[in-house]
Amino acid sequence: MRLGELITLMHQLDPSLKLGIDSQSILPVSGMSASDNRLLFHTATQTPLTVGTFQQHAVHFDQQLIVFRSNDDRLYGFRQSEHWLLFK
Image (cartoon, rainbow, N blue to C red; front, side):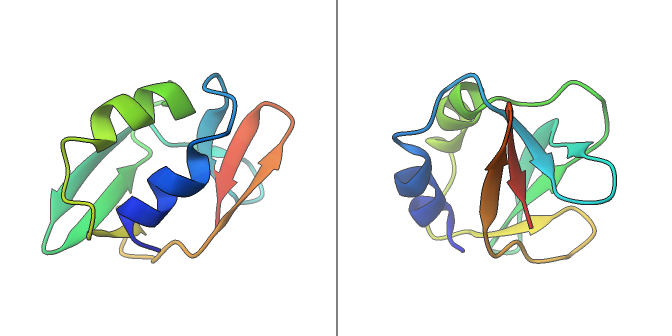
């Protein structure tokens, strides 16, 4: 999934949804950075980004970046669960 595609897909979602990584226990996405043609999602803290804050920050990155977790796992999709947008 490329950043531009993700931004388009998220456009109609509730801006208050919290971002997280889908696992046995939700890992909140707390930040992002760009490196080597990749957008990396970081899970360093328990304070998650929301769809709204993600959209504000994402416009500053190259839309062609491919989305990864910071541990180099590529993210292919997402699902909504209650107040979370979970990436897998």
